[in-house]
Image (cartoon, rainbow over all chains, first blue to last red; front, side):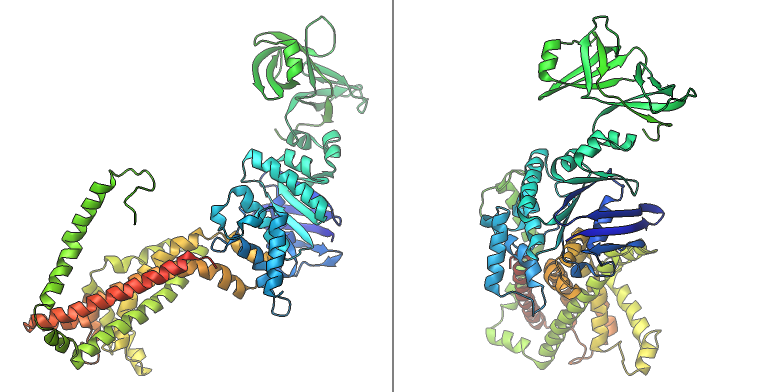
Length: 356
Length: 276
């Protein structure tokens, strides 16, 4: 079932959480709502679930206006960041809850409840924990119980609010891959909120990036990565270096850097900023070649497969560079050494830099 | 109960800790109770039985137990409402109201009794209109109930409040998104959480009400067979040098309330067990 929101606005007091947001999630799609905290992503999710009322705008399920429908009539599965399990009920009863509260006419018989719950617990690989209380489970297990509970009522769409937010890094990675596989199995239209770009890019078919209550970009992970719509998107999706400067006559002069910029052929100069991702920068010993600029190595941090370096150019702000361990070992740079820095890709945005 | 330590603790070893605890408990609780029992059993069993089965004693015991239970139940309901309002809503004066809840703890009980009596007497601010409606309060069992609720309320509010505050509002959202209506959500999710503190609070209020003397004697009117509470009757008997009668009545009060408290405790444990 598809989800569509049209021109949703919502404010809390004087704070505008959502500003005229429209979004469509197609049937069976897996979409991530990504944004920094306060960007309105959770509010949007809660409005879709009917847990919050929009000030303006409408919510449609499968083309039908559901704005006036109560949360419990929307048949939406909702998974909360802090699990929101019923702490006095066993895992089994938690999952069975949605079936037990159905009206007498719709309520399945006890044998059916047992079968469905067992099946769901198997699906989330927790069928051996049915008798436990939520407090006796680990965070990852609790979140899987919450998911099974949400799926028990056979929802038409699944909404997940920072589902892995309170888990540690390792469990988080495992669980999100598992969630992706689960989605590929059951093809439920899913929308999940996260502030972790890595999570969004890894799991979702499509990523919707929100900032201050507005959608700033909506596209596949590749699109967001390769064609960021704004410096904000670029900055949000990983570590970048910013070079401030001006463009004129088809060329951008950005501090120590100078690149072609045919989009601005005018002779009159305009302020501009160049962005280079920290892993799209080459380092080499200075052999007198042109291109790039020289910078002094300040700090080296070797952690895992990637080596992070901090360098300071002769003029300009410190620079973050990530290179592979192989490259690092071949180069063998030591703090204090001067290296030639050549960004492989610089994205130029004309205009005053909007935000830091 | 095992003597072995379950978790390492900051207190010195189990032996000295238990010793000090038992000594303290003996000095302030067990020794007086034992003395009471010993005194009451000094006479013959027949005399004991005769002392506690006179109509006046039976009436006083019945009044005390029934009113204490009733007031505890009422305090529990009112306390639920009050603590819900205090935890879930933000309104001007909330902190003041919150502080006011504890006032009955601090007020000398006689002051509370005199105030309530003045207020609810047939010529008092509240008593006069109520009497005109045909509901006299002071000098009736209802008046005693009012005093007991006044004293019991802080117990129920203070036991419910932290539990209510610890309830995540997300849990109610979860119930709604799973299709539960208000009634179902309250019955299946909220009520099981609130039942144990509700019982604890009611138990405390009951215990307090049963032993209360100072605030009740003013408003009750102390008419034998009608509004005479058991603690007052103990006092009366002592003043008449009927020590045997007084201790016999006190023993009944003690044993009966202990049994009731034990029962309520079991009930609480059962409710807190929580697994369905």
